View 1 (spheres, rainbow, N blue to C red):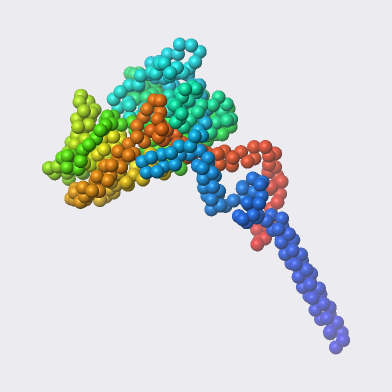
View 2 (cartoon, rainbow, N blue to C red; view 1 turned 60 degrees about the vertical axis):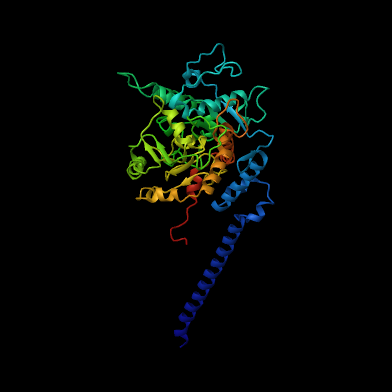
Length: 487
């Protein structure tokens, strides 16, 4: 018996020893894992307030990132931005945004207006000589002209006190790097090439611009993230936009842009310059405007503009509705002015793109806009509630038989009068002036740009985290490999 039990007892002892060994190994592994976890511990959000080291911000998850972004924007707003109170705005004395503007050759800007420099400067002296801007439809996309004038005027001691930008000569001091290319004018004037031309003048200018910008130290430093480029005409910058997309664009809408190139988070929507004259001393009433609903323009459009055709057939026989084809040719603007001022409501229907100048003509005429454009983006909508003076109707509802006309007829005189009064309160937000005036369209656009500055700074700071770090060694990283069955 003793001989039989000998080997068995040895086996039992060996198993116990093996069990103890694995138990100790597991315990040591667990303790070492706790030590690793403790060494890589990230403080909770409350503790971030106690740590002045910005490196910890790189560990924020998306929800904390959004909170941080809001805090940065809030602090920037308290320091510089305007406060809106209904139709009135109150601006702080401090300048909103510092602009560094490239001294591009005149062929990119005022040279397109046939201006020629008289000396070494590439800019006209806007105190004495402002180049004329072409009229007609060119005017509706002329914001590049007004913003550039405003930057140039900011350099003079007698510049208006209400200005919202100032030009700086050192790009490192700037909030925004401004690219003074009159892209809408370039498209209107040079997009139609001459016979036998391989490239039209507009495309050539875009290629020159891309080549120039991407070789500049300012662009290389930020990857273009702090640059501001104007492309208000929907067809402007068609070639360059795909290469300069990191910049902030000023646009009329996003209709011809893929969302990864332009979007409401990154870019700024600016108003058209209305072609109809402002309605001064408007004493009209609900009853003194005989036309219920007004539309004059191109009726047969493609894409999203198909609703115009549908609405034409639905409304053409309504006795108090004016729905007809029209253009600015001959006395088109005069007729549209008279028609809008005699109307209670003015239709703004999507055309080839979601937006059109018709909305801003309606505002200038104090004709309550009826917006039928599901994809429209509106200027300064983060500070202005358009529902206070506009009617929004979904396209799918608008083209139902009798829906739109019954809906408009159901709006009371009191409600219309309230919206009409509101139009008169806010119309100055859409007026372009030189010199710019407090809270006119020029300054409202600059304020919209200024509200993008905190997000731009956040991008730049995150982009530059490792600018001074030594290059990573991939071999070292690859050598730390866990086995497949580690977990």
